[in-house]
Length: 198
Image 1 (cartoon, one colour):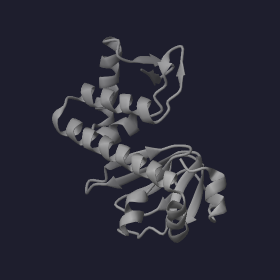
Image 2: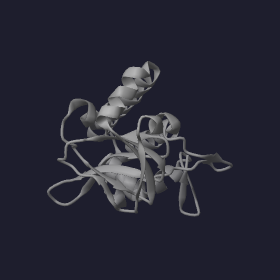
Image 3: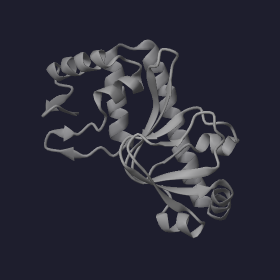
């Protein structure tokens, strides 16, 4: 997203988070810009029944949590390390200065936020109106387009767990497992050593 050297020039520091460690909590006011150096971060909420809903999953070189930072609103979700992760953290005032002094970076941030908003709009329609097979394929195709999933002789390796697919689509994990098997029979997906490919 933003070059590490540029972030460090404006005062960004590297912070390490262990698997399952909270980066920031729902309800807190944002104070920093966050960009992943390595690892994987999810933003999620829990409903009254304790069921998790994943708002988004973020990988190397991606940023997360910017909308509340720009709006000076409380975080609407928790941010948690899915695996051991290193993150560049830049105070809000320094981040705003970086954007003011680097208009091309500002455009890139706007494009990134627009892409996320587009994804949320598409997935909201999918979750409310479509069958599980359609929801799962839409999510997977979005992942291929925007998360740089690796491609090999089997196709694109889908870097979501079955639980994450469920949490991102509003489906129970059992439904996801059945849906993936049905899509495999139809030739839409491949399962190789329990890994899903498109």
